[in-house]
Amino acid sequence: MKGALTLPEAAIEISGPQHRRAGWPIACSAVLGMALAFIPIAVSSIPPLADYPNHLARVHILTHLGGSPELAEYYRSVQGVQPNLAFDVVVGALTRVMPLEAAGRTFIALTIASLVGGVLALHRVLHRRPSLWPLLSLFFVYNRLLLWGFLGYLFTLGLALASFAAWIALDRHRVVRIVAATVLATLLYFGHLYAFGVYAVCIAGYELNGLWQQPRRLTALASAATAAIQFLPACFLFWSASPTSGAARETHWGSLWRKLGAPANLIFTYDVLLDLLCVGTIVAVVVWGLVRRRITFRRTMLGPLALLLTAFVAMPDQLFSSYAADKRLTVPILLVAIAASDWRPWDRLPALLVSASFMVRLVLIVQLWLQANTVYAEYLAAIHRIPSAAKLMVIVAHASDISLPSIPAFEIANLAAVYRHAFVPSLFTYPREAASAIAFSQKMEELAQSTPFHIWRSPALARLRDSTAGDRTGPFPPNVVSQYEYLLLVNGEDLPVAPPRGKTVYETPQFRLLELRPSAGRKAVEGG
Image (cartoon, rainbow, N blue to C red):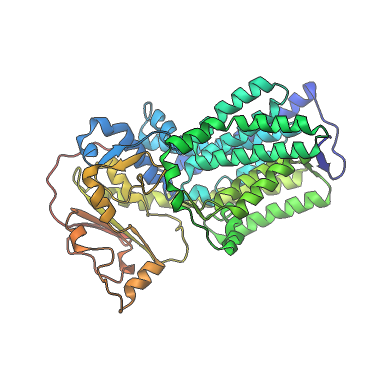
């Protein structure tokens, strides 16, 4: 096969009716695999994704801001041309036909479908034959980035892979290609900036690879120049109108050594030993395929993969105020590698081993997400004790060295904005989160800015324990606390300073809800 590295030479392609007959079992396998991947979402009331409650709260505020005086008192919309609107637009549209919680879970399912579908589309265009191999991507859809709640990025990333496939497929239709690519690139920009960047890097690598192999250099240069046209509208919007570009100063580089652990974001979920066992099985299958000379690889994808790896090494830890910028690239690197390779002919034993690993991993995730239902039910019960439109201060002590707990509670208090229309200062807003579509009202901006950041990790807790520290108020400055009516204190036993006095309204081993002062006695608000 032209353009493929084969071990040995690739088998003869099947085509026509035989091709279509081979595609049906693979299509059925893809549908079955994605249906199984949706099970954790189906059994979960609030999926335990760290940033997910914040995303729900943002959509609820955007959707109800015009009809709610309580929300309008605390928040305002700054939705415009910021490149992070995938979740807001899609879930906002879905809430017209279903409740917010169902719309959010539907978006998670669409994210999984987008990632797998993007790999399938790119593989199909590159290899021009149906194959079970790209379904390996199902094993990696529950990655660490999904558990953090980077939903807009992952959803748009799947669309970016499909758009890249469309660019390759339309090679002989130049006018249609550039028009379609410009529309798709602009939509990707609005979906998420990082996914747009991944798409741009893939296009650049693909065209550079063609430039290297094309003996007619002028033709190749003209093609590369044409490819750049599609990015002009998005670049103009970013630099001229997007608030995200103003957050360039919030870009920071971490230690280069931290990148060595970045691939763990692809595999680590909840049980390290089980994760290593499952991934070890996948690695063994791949090694077996290499030894048996079953695996092929498209040479045309060397450029995109090389540029993605280069971008990963050069990428800062925090870009435009967004965390884990470099770690986000591990997912597209793996998915592009899966799409660029193929296994032919497919063997039954490797298929069974990969399927068994996927099922074991899925059972673990389902069990944990069912446990999360019980934990989050307690939080929701506490939130419903808060009067309408109250001001809720949030402090989360996180003394563990593990950055992301199995059932995260970092942003769960943001659901008070959904169910009680409360003021919650921990909500991701502009300008602190440069790509967010909501901001605090001018009336509440000063209070939000003066409120300590709600997550207190080990280094901050250690400083509080230092007896020589001058400030012992820590997360509870009296002049700030006095302006709040309620305090949600998560893992309060890990705080070395005492919380302010208040009436305990709800208490569990994980958290306490304190009434700091009586609220204004406002009427109840319907949730969702």
